[in-house]
Image (cartoon, rainbow, N blue to C red; front, top):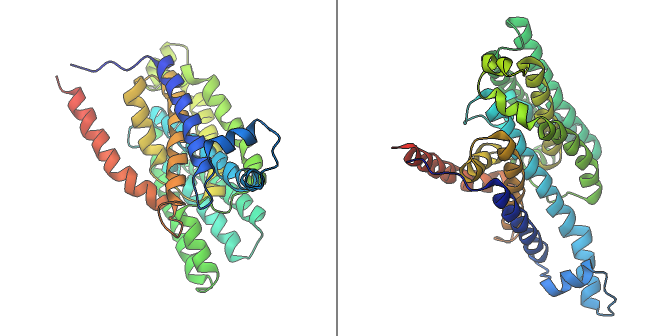
Length: 339
């Protein structure tokens, strides 16, 4: 017997409350612990002459909150892109880098590190590399047969992504092994250690711009999972809608990868977790994936900077958590689907 999903409204309220709790816990966790009372005093702007409050305020606003906000953006963006791609390609094993956007953004960023550019320029090259990669994928698929062919898009994405990966390997060979190569390797593994509030403020409008069409068109995107012919019968033109989804998902993925590095498994695993909670309908799946992805990424980032004396790369932690969790999700889905 198939298990019925929980009421979507109740799930979204619970996830929103859990996100707030997770953010407060993450803000207070670290080498310099901040108690909930201190956080409340600081957030309410309560006057205090306590030096501990002043120190805690500096830690929260200059270190913890920018990093937590960045984790929320990264988790929400990758999870939303994963849910959109899985619905678009009607394949639950699709992730945000299916069109090579992560590899392209990675190549742009490591090229900037090799050239010794400032952080802002490295992020810009990473963002531009991700967008350029997807443009090449779409152009290649269109030249071969037509941009509307989903299979050709996926195959072209695999080819271009492999080329970008080879280019990254070449840059690593050319990099200075004592200075540039460690920075490139650490960036490719994913980290939010160097994120500042300015970075968050730069990425936030871009992520919002990419999420907006996904949210506004969530009903139509859900129809795409029925197939192109069924979508046309229901009055949805699959061609332009697919282009919008690809552009929006690519925009949010490239923007966060340019800041955080390549972080795998989030866009693949989180939509499956959300699907178990609210069902496969995209209008419910998208907000649940956004909230669940933000919660997951905040927890992972908190673990990365607190479980060991040195910071663990985010990509390593998401792989350690995501691999077994994804196997469990697949096994559980199979059991639920059995009569």
